[in-house]
Amino acid sequence: MSPLMSAAVRSPDGVAPALAEMARLGSDYLALPFDVAREQYAKSVRAGLVERSLIASARFEHVLSAMESLMLGCLARSYR
Image 1 (cartoon, helix red, strand yellow):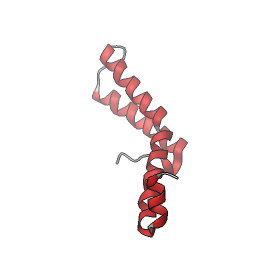
Image 2 (spheres, helix red, strand yellow):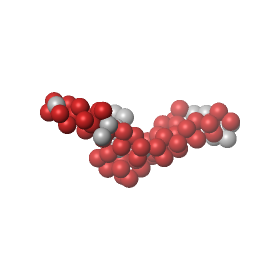
Image 3 (cartoon, rainbow, N blue to C red):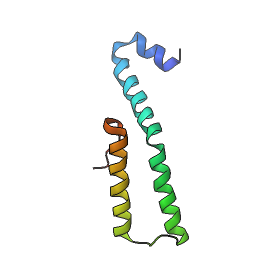
Image 4 (tube, rainbow, N blue to C red):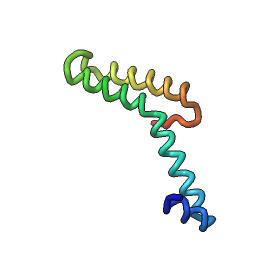
């Protein structure tokens, strides 16, 4: 058992923060494909393959955030 988990098991006050941290790490892992898509879009803009536009960037982020919410449900991160 890891030191974090063993300390959390012994202390009732430590269980909630440990579980919250594990949930955050899990949602970060599940959101990785969406982060990769954001990074690829940014690289495409820098390379000149995609139009450099705030409106186009906002539309892309809106669509990607909607897809992330649809796919991950309550585990999706919120950017509001």
